[in-house]
Length: 398
Image 1 (tube, helix red, strand yellow):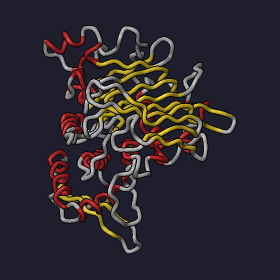
Image 2 (cartoon, helix red, strand yellow):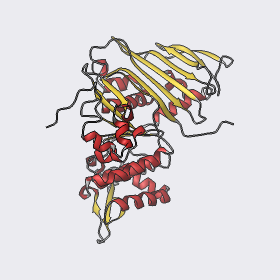
Image 3 (cartoon, rainbow, N blue to C red):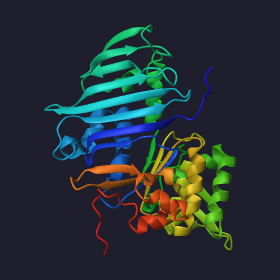
Image 4 (tube, helix red, strand yellow):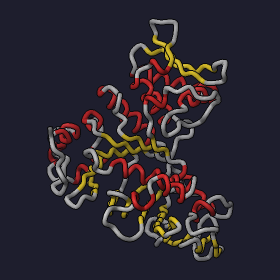
């Protein structure tokens, strides 16, 4: 039996998606940090994963509508479909590739191309076992699909439906289901301290929402269903927040749930609305990074906001721990966070003179490896402008 390992994204290519006219991220590391100036495309890169996950879970049309249709989605001045290509290493260390191309008609978005390819062995040629266009196509059933597997001609109920979403819910398409489950499980964070201060309806919830507005519910779930995991989260939080001794969720008389924080010198806890922004955000991140059912991909944009710079090294360590059982992607402007990262883990995104984004590894920029060899750190190189490639538009320094 093939050895089971952590599934992860190995390579990504995006074409015609906003400022990502044609970018590639080859050989992604389990823990990856993306750095670049404002407006360089970091948020757009994260939205690639959110768009794909939304398309597979709630539908392509809804994901398309929420983002302003092709008027806002397709790269300015570009023609042709928006195209995504993801190479995915599955739990059995087999390589699969998912291709999705989207066009727009007068009636809305259509799937111009959707494929899943399966590679048998390290040197095997990829076999296309799912091939659809405009709602019609072919899928090969079975655990290890090949030309000898059952070939099924399929017609979906509309040209805007994704075959992976439809067939991925059927038992006779386990490889399709595997990728669908992988992609809809991605967690992309847009946590804000303001969202975590709410008083939601009581009831345990297993995973933090993208905004973090259900943080009290997640605390309730962890403390009730996974007390050992909750104790570990509290231990790590207390080690980084001076005097914090306890976090509890309390059900109010009206059925809502209140999150409370207690400092060690005092008996009475304070409500979440009086807790610091940094404490709330750090707690939110820890509940995700120590989720009992860790998401296969965790993406967090600019986690340094509201956190003390001294916490960055510890946050990177937490992310690396989580990446051992999943995959973690961060974006940042923080030199302190970059100082804790290693060269191969850092990707640099900038926009060129043509207005489109490009991405390179930090160690692929001339001079950077030599600086690292003699003891320089990436955060200092970032602040001094050494992580700006020669083709990039240099941001003005005030």
